[in-house]
Structure formats: structure tokens, C-alpha cells
Image (tube, rainbow, N blue to C red; front, side):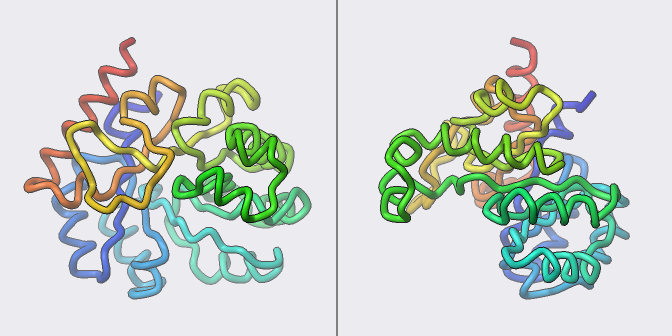
Length: 241
């Protein structure tokens, strides 16, 4: 069973290796996983993954690249970059056949999550992208549909907002992982925030999230470690309800 601290993923949305390692050194005993996204990976590449895996030990890296291409290309990229991962993301838009091929070919060294609908996306965005109004006006329906397709393809879980995680768990079962970004503690406003479908740590955990991803509310705090501990306290209280 995951401890409250294990359920907190810190988003290493920083520009370079030096800043990333500084964050890791301050937070390695405060959070469970570290998320590496496009900004840091494009700046530092595979070598950073190796350095962090050696520093942290295995299974503490969440590589969030959302690789969107034909399955053969995604698998080629995976073979080139995988090292010591716990979680890895691909877009659910790769489709059932593409997701299934990636899952079957990647083995069991890490867990594959399908990204459903980005937490920055609104109903207006979905309408503009051509989604049927039943899904655009109720993104939860779209997220659940994508989650079911991902589960049928063999994915271990999904990335979704805390708004939709309860419905995902109801549709796919408690063993299907749900990782929730767009987490905003009530005590940590983010100026100019680009996240739209946001919830607090407590709300996400209460709704059924297995992991929550927190970046700027921790990275912009005067003390990153203290901010992380406040989030963990919220997680712990939510699990006791």
C-alpha cells in the first residue's frame, strides 16, 4: 500500500540539469516520484535520466513525454530512452491498436499511462477541435471513454484531472491507475495559471487519485521541502476520511 508521501509526484518543469538536481536533492526524501517532461528532457536528454536513476534508485522517475507518432516510431524512441522508469505516458489518441502494440512490445519494466484530456483543455477547446457536443460539454464522458479504451488496450492507467478521476475509477475499477495533474492547493495560487480543470490535493485523493502531480505550488514556494510536506499532510488527511 502506498504511503501518503509515495503518492506525491513532483514535476521537474525546470530548464536545466543543475536546477533539476538541486530540486531532487531538496525533495528526494519528501516526494515519491519525480516527473520529467518535455522542457527538461529536450534540454538534457537521456543522460539526465541515467544520472537521476543512479541518484534516486530505480522506479522513482515518471517520464511524461506523451510521444505521439505511429507505434513503430514510439517504440523506437522508448528503446532509446528507457532507463529506470516507474511510469511513462503516451497519448490515448494513438488509438486502441496503437496503444496495445506499444504495451505488448514494451514489456513490464515500467507502467504505461494513457493521457486522456489535458488539464489545460476547456469545453470550448474540445468544440473547436471538432468533438461531438456530448463530449465537449461534458469532458468527463470523453475522459471515461478514453480510459476504457486504454484499459482494453492493456495500459496500466491514465492521466486525468481530479474532476474526472472518480468516474474513471467507477468505470475501470480501483486497480486501474489514475495520475492527476492540475493540482492546486488552496494556499498556493499560481499567477497566470494555464491549468483549467484544477482540484486541491485533498479533493483529488478523495475522488480516487492514486498519484497527484504538483509542480509550481512547490517549486515557487520559499521552501520547496516545506511546501511538499504540506501537500503530503493533505494527502494523509484525505486518506483518513
